[in-house]
Image (cartoon, rainbow, N blue to C red; front, side, top):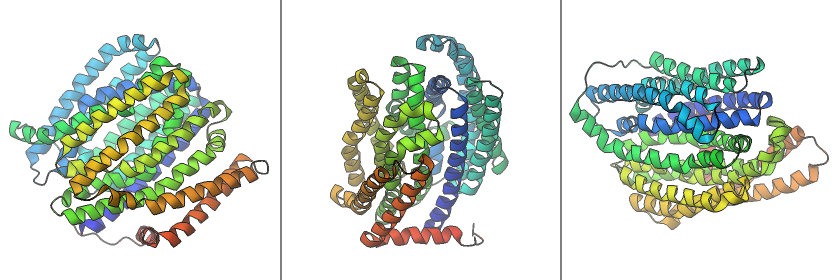
Length: 487
């Protein structure tokens, strides 16, 4: 099977994984949001900042290095597995030990037992990390989809059941613990690889040469994307962090559904094309243009309908999150254009470039918060968006240098979808205002969404028929009866 067909089939299964798991987790999230207080979500958000930070030490970049490597030997896999497991065990012990001081730092004693429970997940994650990378390298996205779907359903059932029983914040803890555990067990069931007792210093060094820069990026990415969670939790109350978390949760869910689907497949696909610059460039441009053409109208539509979406999905108690969600929608548009950047750097063996761009992003993120926090959460969200658009042209210029193309030509592929999305947004704003007093929130969401989709489809068909035809081709492949694949 050709790289193109492998990539398309992988995108389809990645879409099933992302859409299925995200839709499922969003439904569960909506139910929990109606059963639990903003403070409960704020506490777990703080605990997750700690969990995400500690996990940086677990991820040595070995997984992505294994996906990228052309000549993979069994010793690479064994070495990566045992090192990951040793680090996972160490992090669990450290996490349990420092849970108390971390809770005192935030002035939230209730965090201590939550952090201790979450520390157990370091071992669980270490056991599943390499299995996930092996399946991605083989383009086995059907099995990865099964992992996420099973874990989402199991975690959701436990979380909602605990919330109904009145267990409060522990409902969110239980949901996450079950999700991670079932996910790892499913990976081991789906993968035929099993470790042996072989650890090689030479193979470690070969993985480390790629992984060190990916690990460095992960540190920078954490401070760039999660610093606001930490700082909001430190400066503002858990309730305010709860509002911020809900708005960001919707943004991340839409990112997962609309963008992550293609990005998951991008690294193994780009890695196979690293020695063919022209095909590499075409693959990058096609993936980015199609992703942005799908994501732009969706994020702009989210901004238009945020008041109704918050009211219907979460309830009246979450309405203060509305303006934050509207601003963060602009962040989603930027993500749709830049999300493939890391895959390009890794596939081309330029992980160090990615690291230095991440350092710049972190500096801008901290500066934006330092300037904006005194004016409240809305200003913090605006600062995050401005920071992203300041860094955008720099990162894209570096990408164009790597792909041997001009920035102007690269940006030109977004003119048609961006213009069509803006026209659709203006029509949606007008329609919403006309119908605001005539329809209930559910009816308003339905009518504005359907009309927006029709307007956008007509505009894309007329002004960018190539994009329209590519979408039709993908839809045909998705509904076509699967054929037996060659291995």
